[in-house]
Length: 293
Ligand code: NDP
Figure 1: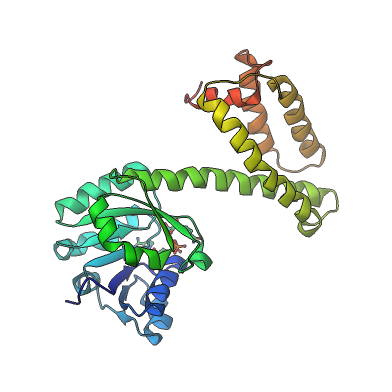
Figure 2: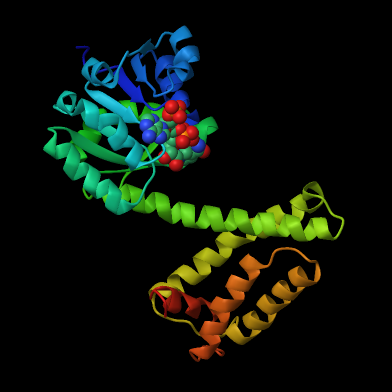
């Protein structure tokens, strides 16, 4: 077996795994790869990676194993048939899933004599290998520290959130709930623009300016929300309700899909019904803290 230093196995060669294996090759690592669809390893093999003939040999090759699979179910599908080869391995699981699935997998790995570090990569494939890119990690701190040089090949910045294997997945999901809803709001804006003869390019500067204004709102409200203060001194939910309804009606008048603006109206309406008309629209956070409130 190769030394743990400067050697790594990458299992899962979607766009992310390919970029990771490539970054390790660029840094001179001894890289073994395995993927269900073996042809996805072709370009990496040309660059010097070793394609393991099966998962068992991929695991046997190196102590440090990077998993970049669609989700944790895919991980079990790949690793369970080769369970015996997991003993002594460090599994850096960069597949996304829920915090609970990450915790279950860490327990399962321990039962096989392996240790899991959970990761949540915050950049797309183009950000892999870049100094400014960042990944959340959680799990045993000593294991993280030991493998930090290799983890910093994947993204230059690493953020160990704690020992709980669910924490990195949680931080990842916190980013993703914002990412998906924000991107859908952008698609909504483009649909509305299109219905009015404007292209995505036409509205791009306005969309960027609107998105760039959001961090100021985040900072302003974070402090107040943590203090439980939802005073309506700079905005009132009643005003927000009217504005949110204008958004819904503008989209309905344009004949575009209203699923997203209607959901926003529904949340604001619940805030009004709960008596928050004179409070800030940040009071909606209190409703959202309780499922089905
Ligand atoms: P893909 O889903 O494109 O590829 C993941 C890999 O999983 C492929 O190699 C695929 O194998 C393998 N796989 C899936 N199901 C199975 C299975 N049942 N058995 C064996 N292998 C399986 O993902 P990405 O490379 O895009 O991303 C990897 C992870 O990183 C995901 O969890 C994703 O959420 C996360 N992520 C992705 C980002 C992105 O921009 N792409 C950004 C940040 C995180 P095969 O090639 O045979 O299909």
